[in-house]
Image 1 (cartoon, one colour):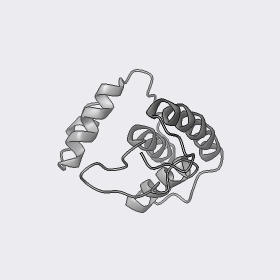
Image 2: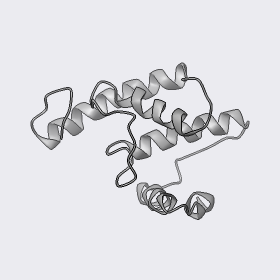
Image 3: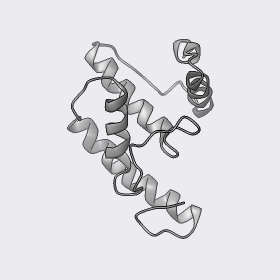
Image 4: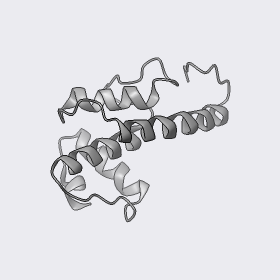
Amino acid sequence: MLNKLHCSTQEELQEQEKWFSVSRIIELLENPVKESFDLKHLQEIHRYIFQDVYPWAGEINMIHPFREGNGRTQRVFLQFLAKEAVYLLDFKSLTVRQMENASIRSASVDNKGFYDI
């Protein structure tokens, strides 16, 4: 996969992506981007988290929105939204599979999966 780090294997890319994305998420939680809670806001979060790794960070296509980092981007976005609404959001009880399924349904304009979780 095309990346700024010139990683040649998927394993190497995943390891580097994890390190950079965790660092950027910590920065983002301490100093959030301007919050508008719209598509541009979601794209900006994705761009910020993955700016060191992918030249296409922040781009969306509906065939596979945010080729990498969907879950991490959604969690940060939802944390900001919950904070704005003065609501505590705890992801500890959610599985990766639950988030993936809700995301897949949402791409078809069916947000029930997110409501359920």
